[in-house]
Image 1 (cartoon, one colour):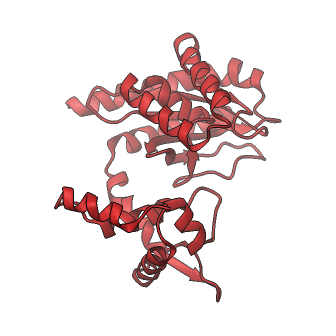
Image 2: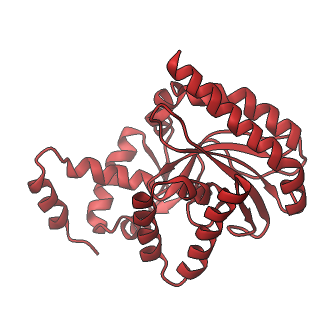
Length: 268
């Protein structure tokens, strides 16, 4: 486990760096999609910090409303105040507003979960999401975070990222999971090939065997970060054939429409 002096030395090297703030934000980012309660020991392992440090941080964050404590042996879930951390910024993103009607129509036409995501460190973060009229859909929505390497959204991001960024992310993925790296690396390379030949990236059971999806990376002319548009659903409903023959053309058209409108809005 990392010694607290490591962060202190970083702060000494950069007098503008606030170690306590960095640690507090690291705690909040530990909560992944589908996880509700985490204890101090789990958070300490994920943040690579002493448990005593994490205990003080979770106490402070819960007092401020960013974490909610549950039980005698304290375990924490994200508090309601975390909803304010990016809401204003996201609400002002023109790309989110412009994409909403396009995504809503696409979700209705394809009966799938249509999502817009951005990279947040080693995860892809859903910033907009619409569900189609299918009776069965996925339990993912705005605010969900999914891993980069095995998902269509993550592989689509890597397919468009510049070589330097992609290599850095691949190095981190490999260091996190050396056992699975050969399989993950193959999927990343397949994603790049998919993007070149199909215009989108496929994930058929790569992340979860019950989930199929397609993703298209969005590159804007205004210097905005890469975003990714996806269509996904349960494999029994969104079969590979259905995704490729029926959904893929509509997804590509929707992606092109969003990029065109965002670029036009940027120069207006």
